[in-house]
Amino acid sequence: MQTVAKLIDTTQCIGCKACEVACQEWNDQEFTLGTFNNSYQTMPDLAPNFWNLIKFNEAEQNGAQSWLMAKYQCMHCADAGCIKACPAPGAIIQRANGIVDFEHDACIGCGYCITGCPFDVPRLSSKTKKVYKCSLCSDRVAVGLEPACIKSCPTNCLSFGTRHDLKFLAEKRVSELKSDGFENAAIYDGPGVGGTNVLYVLKHGDKPEQYGLPKDPRIPWTVSLWKGPVKWLGNLVFFGGLFTALVHFLAIGPKEHKHED
Amino acid sequence: MKTEMARSRMERFSLAERVSHWLVAISFVYAGLSGTALWSKAMWWTAGVLGGGEMIRAWHPIAGVIFSLLLARLFWMWNRAMRLDAQDREWLKVGHKYAMHMEEGVPESGRFNAGQKSLFWLQSTSATLLFASGIVLWFPELMPRTLRLMAVLVHPIAALASLGGIIVHIYMSTLVVPGAFTAMTRGWVSPEWAKSHHPKWYRETSK
Image (cartoon, each protein chain N blue to C red):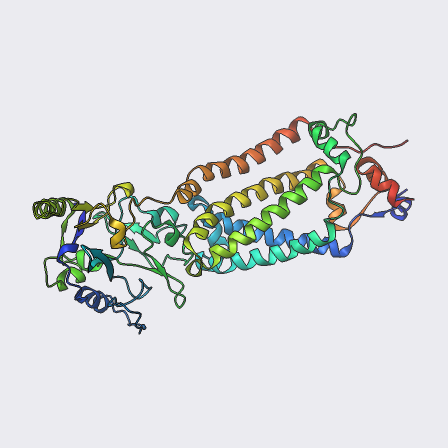
């Protein structure tokens, strides 16, 4: 099966938030009222019931204020930090088409996935004690539909298809931008996590931080250590301890205290 | 003979000490078993034994807090007696002789020997680390990312240090030192036992 992907051409985002509404509608989320905090952004951050946020990043260019809008949601990593950190079997699954999906029946709400995620995406609901994030509309994709956000996009900002095709499309767009004078235009697709299935085209590809994206996303080293060498240390302590005790018992045995006759 | 022995029993652990010790032990076993489920998918079956994943997610931290509070009580009762002196440091240098049951060159011990004292400080330190990192892991949505990234490493490493100490502790007290288990359950030891294992303590208490 081909890996599916979503392409976000940030240069064509107009900040209409249609994708936010479509996401809320399709996934049947109740909307939480926020407060105005000097930004056109809908919410300050992702939430358990808000999986797709257009960040209205403000940047200065040639002395003028400009928006570097970036759609922010689960990146569907090939090497997913959430899966690495999750203790509950079957709670996070990577589908054959590359979608990283949360199975809420198996989720125990420990929140380890939040710590494992290099993009800080999953959100724990204090109401249901489960963790939520974008599913890339796996229910729609399974029946041949495109994700709700893609469907609603009025510009060419969002595209859906196989990762292979979208990468080709993104490369074409980057070379267009380069010939338009944006020398640093680049694709952002997280090679450090084995590639993400959400691809970005960035005008300022050298500074993804300006878009609120981590420069070099990787599974945090403490998480890798915890799920790798520390596990072996655990085996060593447990089985080594039992083995040493067994050998000591067989070779030396119990202590007998002196009897004063 | 038996009645003579009974008359000369020495109190090793008071009722309060024994109750605290065993409550610590019970909460340790629960926190340990549920913890291994959260630690490794190979150990997930312990979650099933304890009522399922959501159950251990809810109760592991609570058991941890109970464990910490009870251990704090033991710490309060024992920390003075557990301080290592010069003789204890000598003891630690020849710890292998103690393990081989050789008596020559092993300094005499007081109420607790240097091995027990080391275990006490190991458990106190690891419990402190487990408590601090455990609070962070309990409420991930309220904690800064940097703290959480540290806690996922500190918590299991402290737990392993604790587990390693406990394996030795349980082995020693049940299989290596006859009389040690009764000391912690019924609270008494025989004078011979005291003379043999803790001569300094024997002399001090039978003055």
